[in-house]
Amino acid sequence: MSEPVSVVGGGLAGCEAAWFLANRGHVVRLYEMRPVRRTPAHQTDLLAELVCTNSFKSEDPATAHGQLKREMACLGSLLLRCAAEARVPAGSALAVDREMFAGAMTTSVGAHPRIEIVRDEIVDIPAGPAVIATGPLTSAGLSGAVRGVLGDAGLAFYDAIAPILGYDSINLGIAFPAGRFGEDDDYLNCPLSRAEYGDFIRELRAAATYEGHEWENLPYFEGCLPIEVMASRGEQTLRFGPMKPIGLEDPRTGRRPFAVVQLRREDRGGQMWNMVGFQTRLRHAEQKRVFQMIPGLDHAEFLRFGSIHRNSYLNFPACLTPPGALPSRPDILFAGQLTGVEGYTESAASGIMAALNLDRVLRGLQPAIPPTTTMLGGLYRYLRETKAKHFQPMNSNWGLVDPLSQPEQNRDAKRRALAERALADFRRWLREGQVAAETGETGEAGTAARGHSGKACPGESRDRNPAVIPAEAGIQL
Image 1: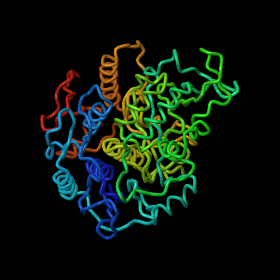
Image 2: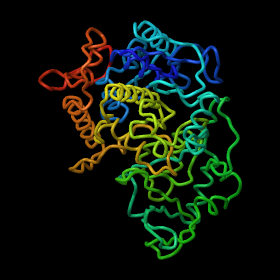
Image 3: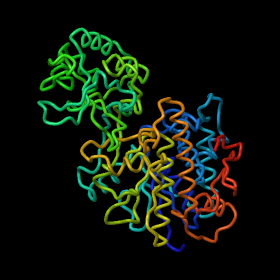
Image 4: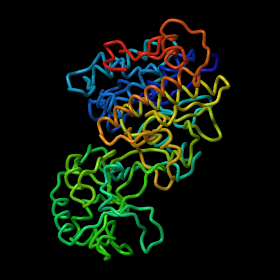
């Protein structure tokens, strides 16, 4: 590999991308602008500094985050290796000593013989092949360069996210399909009586909110006010806003409800439904408590909680190719939160995927994305197929993957079945050579390459029976 590859951004996604590419034989220059240019969120100059929580969430394979970790393990994730070194007790969650973790990531990346860490700010799209993983605090210079390529509509700077609910947890005996004035039935509608609306407004106003970090407290846009802020402006504000009942008739009564909460389909399969206009800064427990007061949502499963915070992310389905590249430059791929994924592990996993596909592009191969029965495959389908005008960042959840061919009513059994199928299909994708490329590497690089070369993914024996990956990684396969 003669031409150096650039990785811009030394966060989780950037570190994973640099590690993967170097282990595939590429010479990598990893650019991190700190300490040359500081950010309002970071406290150190270490790579992969964890700005918010110190938890990478559950390791339980029956959870979406647990399954995502298993797929990352199959791809030789550096995050999982360093997290194992720095972990602290946290029940079923993988939590770490944040300084120890960042130190381990920095040491590992810096010690790799094919990675050069360059402390400098990049303000233009690189001329050569690159992974851009600069995160939600992308500098103004690079943001301007990206906007110059993608246009003003290609880059957002503020998240106003409404909760997403699992379809099979919505009470369809109450929620009814209809559009306003009978134009269509694309929405599900949760009707409220006058008394139910009054109770809801009272609890919404009293609920505890998350105010976020000082550096992300931006003035609210009138077009994306938190639902609790709207409620504070007057008893009837929501009835004339996102909860207006105009044009709708409750089939149970034959009359217009006093107020309505509308749910909009978030995916083609109809497994995920967005609470329209319900962007919020309520704490997660409060979102569950208050929003489950809404008729039809008393047992709703929250696949994603609502939030409002400062962020920079691309309109992936409108501006990027399926693997996340510039349409005019297949050798420029984006990764991490900049692509519209939410969460530490999601960002890191997208860094691996961007590196995997950049490696394939440079070898003259077609990009490869896992099947949509897997967590990574489902996440990438969301990124590329969501309607551009509704696109918002997404975390991993079981609503992203294909439903089971044989429906399972028990929620725990369903998740176990989804996890078993996801791991089997991910391993099959690897074994069948969808990401295979001969490198001739040996040693550590060769070991990492085998994680996606079709020979054997971590934790999988030659007889294809499930096993346990090295104990220090802490993940069951």
